[in-house]
Every structure is written in C-alpha cells, then in structure tokens.
Length: 447
Ligand code: ATP
Image (cartoon, rainbow, N blue to C red; front, top):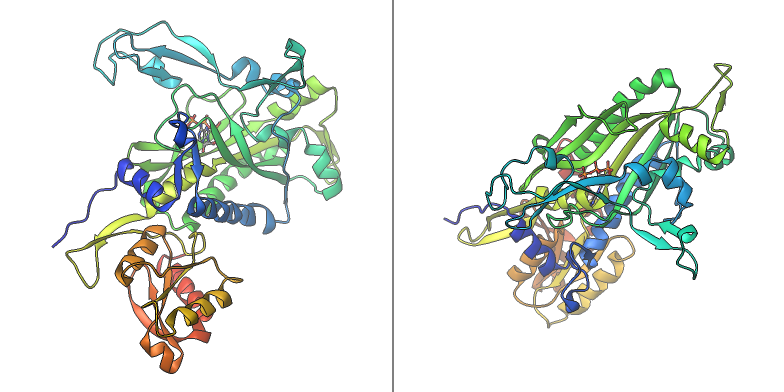
C-alpha cells in the first residue's frame, strides 16, 4: 500500500508552479531574486484571503474603518516614524562561503551554520532596508522618496482624516491592505521573506489606561481569525517578545510551524503613543483627542495587528497540502489541498464524462448557470480520474460530472474533495448541495 509522503518546500514550490498558484517573477529572463508572481489560482486564493480578513476586520465591525493610502508618502513620515534612523539591520558575511546573516542572528553567530567554519565573519555593518527613489525629474537629495516599508504609517497620518468624517470615537480602528517593500538582506524560503510583499494591518486607537486590555483582546481575536481559516491549531503558536522594538511596550507574534521552522505570520503590538506623538512633533499638527465621555484630552495609544498576506498564503498552502492514497485505488497517491471551501480558488469543477453524446452541451449549460455564483472550472481533458486529481491539487472542494444518466434524468454526480464521496443530485440542486457541503465541512472542523 502506498505511503503518505512528507511535505517539503520543494514539493510545494513544484505544485505552485504546476497548478499556476505562484511562480518566479520575470522567469523568461532568468527571474529576479525572491520576487514572485501569483498565477490564476494564486490570485484567486489571495483575493479570497484578503476578502476574509477585510470582512472580519472591517465590514463586520462598526468600530473599524478601512483606507487605501498611497505607497509613496512624504519623506518626513519616515523620519518621524523612526525608519530612517532605525530601520537598519546588522549584516555579516561568512568569509568562507559568503553566506549572509542578518538581524538577531548576527549576535549569536559563532560557527557558520551553512559551511561550518568557525569565527570567520566580516565586521557587522548596517544595511538600510528602505527602497529609495526620486520624485520628479531631478535626482537630488531633496527629491528623495521611499517605497513604504509598512502600511501602518498611512493609517497614523490619516487618523483625523478618517475619524472625523466616519464620526468614530475612541476606541476605534483603521485597517488597510497593501503592498510594502523592504530591501531584505536575506530573503528566502519562497514567499516567506521577499522584498515586495503585501500586509494586512489594523491599528486600534485606545485610551492609555485601556491599552493592555485591548492588546489582550486583539491577541485572541487574531489567533481566532487564523483558526477560522481551518489551520491545524497545533501548528499555530504565540511567541512573546522579550526584546522590544523601539516603539513597542508589549509585543507578541503569531507563528506557524513551517517545514523550515517556526516562523512569524503576524505581529500584535502595543505601540503606546509613540506614533501619534512623533507625527505630532514632526508635522506640527495636533493628534490630541478630546474624549467627551471622560472629559479628557490625550494622545491615543495604539494596538497594532500586522500580518503578511503572502506569509499567510504560504502557511495555508503548507497546512492544507496532503498526499494520501486514492479511495478506489489505494496504490495511487493523490495530492490534495484541503483548503477551506470559502477561500478555495475554484469552488466547482465541471466535467463531461466523455466528449460526445450531448454531455459537453449539458456541462457547458451547468457552467453557465453556476458561473455567476461560484468560481467554476470546466475541464474535458483526459480521463475523469486525472481531472479529479488536477482539481484536488487546485484545492477545488466540489466536482460535478455529467454522465450517461444525466441525459435520462437530469442528475449529475457531485464529488466532495476531502472524503472523495460522490452523490447523485438533480442539476437544479447543485448550488444547494455546495452550500450544504460547505456548512458540513465547517461543522466537521468545529468552525
Ligand atoms: P521578520 O522578523 O520576519 O522580518 P518583522 O517582525 O520585521 O518580520 P513586521 O515589521 O512586524 O515584521 O511586519 C508585519 C508582517 O508583515 C510580518 O508578520 C510578516 O507577515 C509581513 N512581512 C514582513 N516582512 C516581510 C517580508 N520581507 N516578506 C514577506 N512578508 C513580510
């Protein structure tokens, strides 16, 4: 009997390329180091994930507003934020194998973890992590601009621009999803650490005396959000920070057990009044808030939740990736992404059993009926088994097959991805079945 195989980065990268989730950027020119493009399935998965976050963090919450701020901001923003002075990483290189190490790793280095040479490192030097460019035609000092290294600053500087028209009172939050850029010294592990990436950030403004309470609240909310994606709970962990960043008074990471080790998906920080005070100081505008209920004026404290879209996608792909024996042919191994049906890129695969006898016409008609409601994929290539396997690898939760019996009684088979169980239903009942199976799937997972 065939054995389950272990999931490795190599296998996942191959699946991502094969199925069109994620592949090397500018591949025809040899690729650009650590930059990736999301293909048809990848972009759907990413959109669904962001939608899931936006819904939970903005649309279902009366106390959170969304924004979409510009990537290039006034250069003073980055002086005020501390990035110009602080956003540097110490970097050392092994003189033997030229492998580079950065940040916290540098302090603990004795022997090179790559080639094993002892004590053969260059002196640490500081490396600026912000991408720099020029605004306008003249490349001079005063025209320097930066690509944002985080989306958070676009939220802080717009505190009043959002609060006033939205008529929000403290406590309330502002959320944003967008690209950020860091000239990382040691990118790697596929999309885990890249130089261009996407963040999902929410900054929650609170009274200073309530900061701790809200910090605890958001810790719980955020881990529950990951649970709602049906992650294996035992693979998610909190990691409390002992050494804090210049702005934070408490910090915890949500980490995932990747095959390359336990690593950060999201940070939750109590940033105190650092951000608004600094912007008040550098801009000359006041960020004091008058709290009518308390009859008190203060600079709000900020609780930040800052997650990476790409890291979450990578974790989801690993978490849902399984290889297991086929139901009808246990000697055959199938690879399947057991993604939550709500975020799966394609919801329903539609197949005519054979390409004749009126089956393609009916299958096309079903496709036409379902397309306005679900992402569907029509496939008439190769044996039915191969078509199922392709959709399993894409994470498609349901496959509908039109066969000989369909011509007689307008029924089709609908196959559920995880159990591989097939049932016969009326064509008109497909949407209802998809909904029912999705609800059952959630119930089985305790969601
Ligand atoms: P790390 O320690 O891994 O560099 P960080 O602590 O610097 O991460 P934050 O500044 O807290 O990260 O950014 C918030 C989130 O943005 C991270 O939890 C991560 O999901 C994402 N992120 C940060 N840097 C990158 C990157 N280079 N590539 C992909 N995602 C990133």
